[in-house]
Length: 179
Image (cartoon, rainbow, N blue to C red):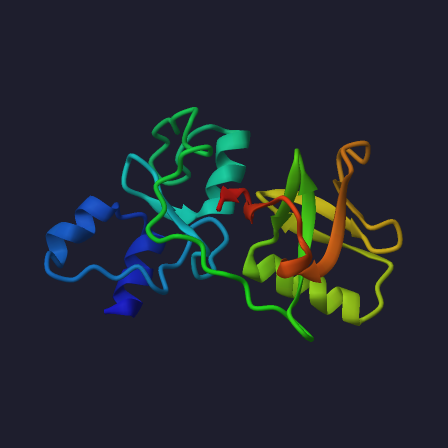
């Protein structure tokens, strides 16, 4: 069933279509995102019924403002009030509970689990900086200056830090999803 569900989502069927096929079963684990082609992190369902990772939807909404599958317009307030299939889970920390955070207005956001792992791996390999795709945009993570910024716009810097969640004052949430 899970393979079929992933295949159907990759092929672009909506949640409504799937409900007709399997009315008594509702699986939200292992849904493959048709944008990043990986298992959905923080699956978000658009009004059209298509499901993507929250950060993939955020990238689409910022770039084209239309669903990547059916081209239906994404409501303006969707990113602030997304329809998540389940709430964000706490990200498991590394080496004593350490995790990665980036600065936002009036607080700190925790990176999503996949980005958190990629940043930690680069940190442990002693990279001075590396590039990563976040919300459909290439970001530079600069460990020496403890900042991140979009590659196309280096003046839009945000501070980053590796810390335990217990030490974070003004924790806002995970990957743009309010706690």
